Image 1 (cartoon, rainbow, N blue to C red):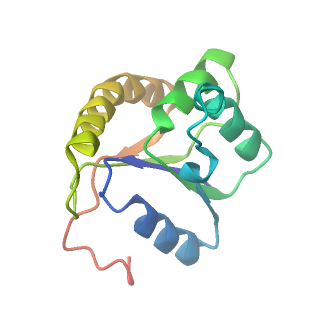
Image 2: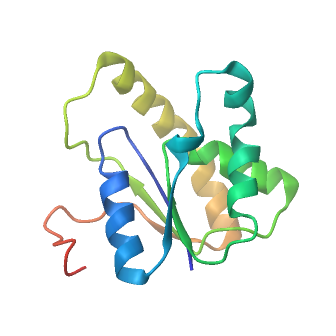
Length: 137
């Protein structure tokens, strides 16, 4: 099973990906581990992550830039689409003005990503209810 988790800074992507990975026995990939401040790295990020997941069938990947990867996969017409996609918008920790601005950009890109995922037939889950007990989920 391929699971993608996207969401705002501070929305719990890392926590939820660890819980899902442990519960389902899936490898957890943290997209932020592949980001550097190098400008060339930033533009090549979708390619790097595609290289990481292209031969995997069972994983959870979480990051804020997953929309860029989805667009690149769609553009290249690769058959490495997710089975499930979680989009988290509830922020649980204090964020900076820069992070708030970044979150607004993510929300804008998400509209395009929704169209791509729907065309792929991916199950889109907009939120995990706040009352969900992640240990028993």
